[in-house]
Length: 280
Image (tube, rainbow, N blue to C red; front, side, top):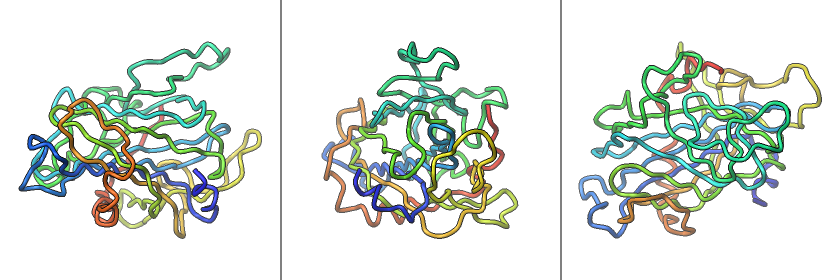
């Protein structure tokens, strides 16, 4: 976590690349797609009084392997005592113990939340672009229009600067078929976004001081629609398919040899990924 404090000049965008590559299992290995991967991006879009709002997007960069029903399940462990105040486009499977909150109650207070996609037909004010497919995620090569899945998350008790925000850890990814082994996170350049009319490129906001009291936040607005500029920092890790079909566990060093190519391949995102975002 010391690397976060050193990058004070970078924009706040947490990009977790979970590149799912071939591992030792013959069941998981695909000779026709040896570098296929699933990429998960965690981009901080705005500050809140006690944390931040992020958009999390999963891309299936495998050529031939779809994630089929009942779909993906994503999990992680918070580094501190963070809570999830609200979500759009997904939900946690358990709320956990929120008894310490006497007023507004968070969506989830678990130390290790588990997130699933919402189902088709979800109310419009609970949707974000590329959500609500029941966890189904087609491959990028065969069906690029349906190869991304996104949700928005409002994180509390997290800090509001790049010195106080701590990265989630121990990511897990469950899906039908072979499981996934996640490598450690690393810092890469920030994600950029293309607006709906394709005439403007924005990126995640720069770090700044915590908000004090009510009032507008002067800086880039949520959903990638603010005036982002300059270099940014993101965090990435890689993962490999494994014969254990249950989870994607962080294993330091499992994918270091492919960090460079993996990051370059995973950074491009489809147009309009974050367009038409709605709030709860």
